[in-house]
Image 1: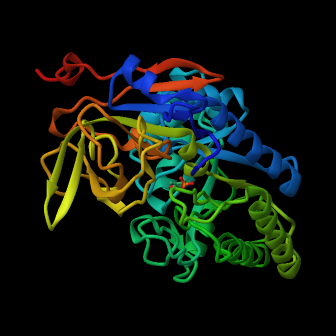
Image 2: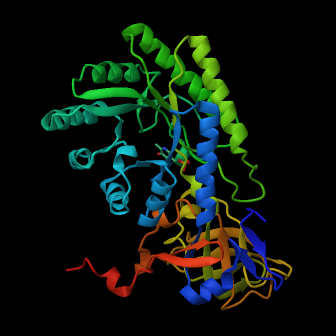
Image 3: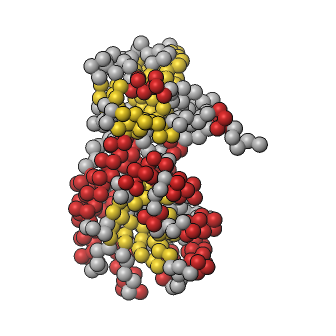
Length: 432
Ligand SMILES: *Cc1c(COP(=O)(O)O)cnc(C)c1O
């Protein structure tokens, strides 16, 4: 199976985290997001362990919480001793309400409003990752007002093409994010920030893209960033304490994706950092990375109930389910690949090609085209889409006035509701 937490019971039913998913569909209804809590905790522990092993005590991973944001996930991150990054007041508020200590949080985004900045400071955010000079000006003003020295990092564009899909490539010179080394704007913003009396510049950040595999992207980014850090040391005698290499490690959505060995991958990045520090003669900074997808994607699965099955002889077949682009817009956005099953027919041969589509009034409402399903597929069957833990719930919308599905956490064979289903009353609760 695509991930170790997926199996098939002796009755031919798909199991997730050891539980037959048809029982969960029955108990909670569909569409339904499932999360394997043990898998998330385990992914956190692996990251923490390999960081300690290869980068040392001061280095740690931060969970990029835009990948999956609800109270329960911040509780897990608090319990696992993970840092987080946040991108909005909404994420900060959710984390705070879950009891997460924001002093371990880093605030990203390419356009922080004045309100964002004030809210973050009022709630003792650990560090701002400033994107541009306008933000530095407001951070300086707000820090001065409060009589504090605010930790900041700067987002730098190292000029690296991660060869992933263009919607998630963020490290090239023409990106909307950060300041480019190539155009000297990275130097200019550093010079400016260092002069601000209420900003404590601790280091630099870059994030080159998402769903990245191979090609030494992180190693190349590390070299470019450490070269930049060395220039600043020579120019300004500036000591960089922290280098954040961003997120982006790919996950296995289908059998065509490579396996990701985190231990080897981080070991390679660490080696590149050490080599670069030696070559450019700078002290090794603490290293941060911000995995989002690779911490939670394979801990997720979405269940749907099949409704209409439409065969158009000589053309194509459609299997329609009771969710779609409202709970999973990733195929519509990025043409993302997924592995899908008919969960109650795992022993039947998948001999019919069909598009798994949603119920929204858009032809583009496709969860996955050209999947193989048993030709007996029909109404009331349960369809499962694997690896939906990242950027599914967090990107869900109410398009077509569909309620957002609930999240059920699975742990050691037990199931527990973590986010309840959005009700009809919820759907109009803000309408006046
Ligand atoms: C989205 C994002 C991440 C997480 O990326 P993943 O591909 O989910 O690991 C990390 N850092 C920043 C700044 C991001 O924008």
